[in-house]
Length: 252
Image (cartoon, rainbow, N blue to C red; front, side):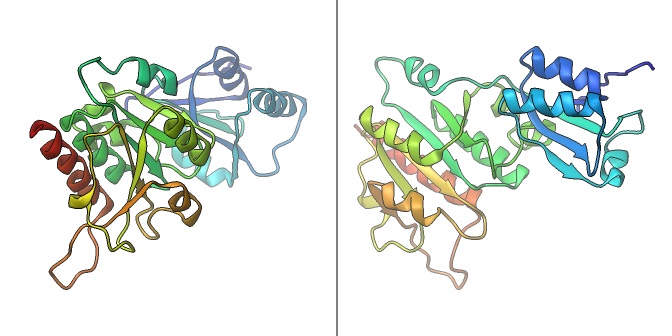
């Protein structure tokens, strides 16, 4: 049986048991892995064992979803590879020029691709040094995200982490203040000092920054609202936070 590997600009798909296994073994960065519900057999079990060794999670889905992703002979397996090359947190910190103050954006549950891309665009325009995203419960960095970012995701470093909370603790040990955008705070973002090394945390579109993450933040900052709608879209809120940091830093 001939296995086919297919890549598309839109989704970077690989399908078929052996091509997916080869991609995992080669260290390709897998964004999403879908396996047909109830799929069995020795080759499928080998693939699952391989994924477990590489700490790669998969999602079991109906065959109809796989058929929508590709018309090829997927054998019950479709993988979506990352559209960018991820970096380590240490790489982001080491790349900060000596004459600049570090600024990073941390995502806590932002799952909408267009919001993710828009935030990346604002971050790049504001001179942020990197983006930090969780392995789980985060928007995929795919072609749509890159388009939404106007290409920013191809230039700004992106780091994927297993635990947002542990990463924030690490950043704090490196001298960062962690500032969360939340409408639940009485302190306005204009009262914070963004001239310090800063990690700005942006939360989920519907629930905001999680309670567990908020507890770790040095600053919980609100954006003042005058109109009837109580909150901004997360990408708009991120832009406000980022450019307040820009305003303070260029005014030094």
